[in-house]
Length: 251
Image (cartoon, rainbow, N blue to C red; front, side):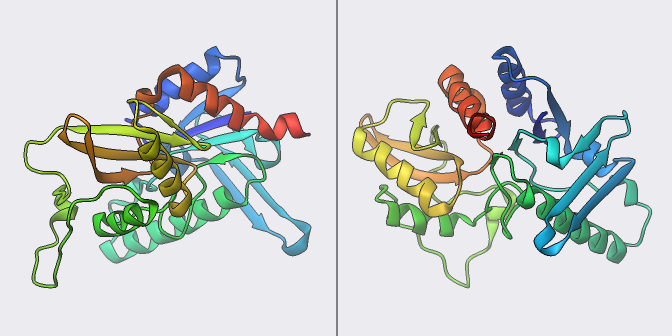
């Protein structure tokens, strides 16, 4: 069994799951974070050198045994706790922390291919502040506009403000997967720098945003471990298919 794990409204993940099924990746289940959080049964054990176990049963009756999973496309970024909304806020915060830790542990422990594995900074790869991405992008050799932020500045990133995107500017997105770029054609040097950024960030599947300062001038504008997969089209599906069946082919 293969899994696509995502938010309930993640249209890009649903598209990717449907495309993978059409390519013969069966059985494949698309499971939302809500379905996982509301599972009837969840068991994950770490047994030292003897290994680990994972067993889940969803409300719909789907049985998942971690040992039988062949691959996972992971786009989870949170664990919903709507069913705890009547509890005190302090209890809700505690429950969410525990559930995130639980999900992080079993997702990281899976022996099958996982795109993207969780990190302490996020369930589907590290979520970074815009300033952190700007620093990493410079290390990778990407063109980055001057970025300045002081302790006196308002932290507007939580409200969606992006210092690297001029007001009204259009954003082009590129995907990086397994050492290749997908989406708009890039100059070779820029494509190589995108691949380096994915490597430096430890993210197998990464979306990278650019703004055009001129027809042939690209400037880094941000990055995300949950890009719009549809931008990669059929070539990206081919790459995903190869990554998700690598374990089976090696067996």
